Length: 141
Image (cartoon, rainbow, N blue to C red; front, side, top):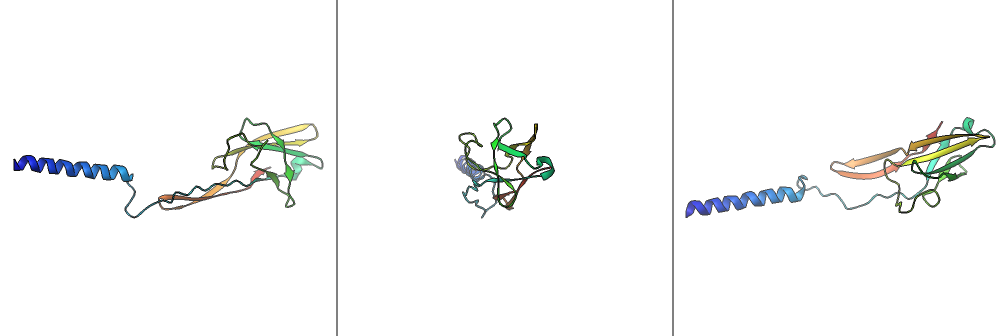
């Protein structure tokens, strides 16, 4: 009877230990990642080499590789501004994500050059937990 009870207690201990490791996801003790979503909903800045544009060149852009590019405006700082809104995004897009690709069409006279470029980004981590993401300027040269 004592041996049988010891086996049950030992089996229960093993089951509890396995459940504890499984449910915690093997994260070290004392580590808890905050449930924060880092969403960037601002525009993507695009730097187009002026030799590609000439005097009367235009720039069209959109989010995704198979999207329909639409004209974008040049900001006062000289960068072209691609907003995250229609007609530049597809429906259901919520914020920029790492790995996002933009399509940029640069037209000079009757010639159009089409580019698909991933938006550059940097991210910081705090050990096990991901941190905020900073998106850079897309460069077309």
